[in-house]
Each structure stands twice: as C-alpha cells, then as structure tokens.
Image 1 (cartoon, one colour):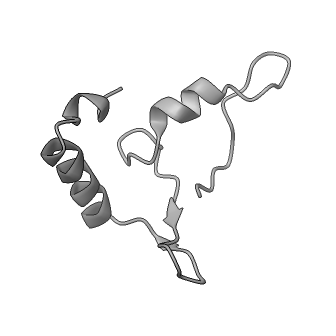
Image 2 (cartoon, helix red, strand yellow):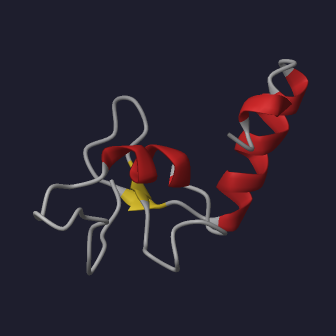
Image 3 (tube, rainbow, N blue to C red):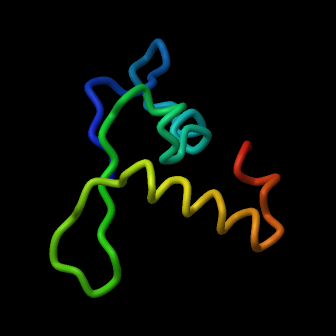
Length: 71
C-alpha cells in the first residue's frame, strides 16, 4: 500500500495506472511516498524499509529476474 498526495492523471482526471506500475514500490521512483506492506498472516501493515527494498532487489537477482527490476 502506498500513500501519495497526488496520483498521476490525464487531462480528464483519469488515473494513469501504467505510471504507478512502473514506479512499483521503489524509493527512487515513488518520490518519497511512504510504502507499507503486510506480511502473510500479519494483522497490521508496517513501513517498507530500505533494507526490505534491498532484499527484494537481491531476490530478483538471485532468481535470475534482475532485468525486471528496472522495468
């Protein structure tokens, strides 16, 4: 879950979903918006940290899917 002050929108105020898909949860693309995650079987959300992001990027690399990290 990501909290943002403004959504990317067209001139007719439709949300541009492809921009959000491209930004994903990466801190270098979300403009400082806080991103929250909830692990399986947890009741509450927690802040997605830089360590979480680094671990996720490493997992992409380990699984041979590093090229998808930059899409």
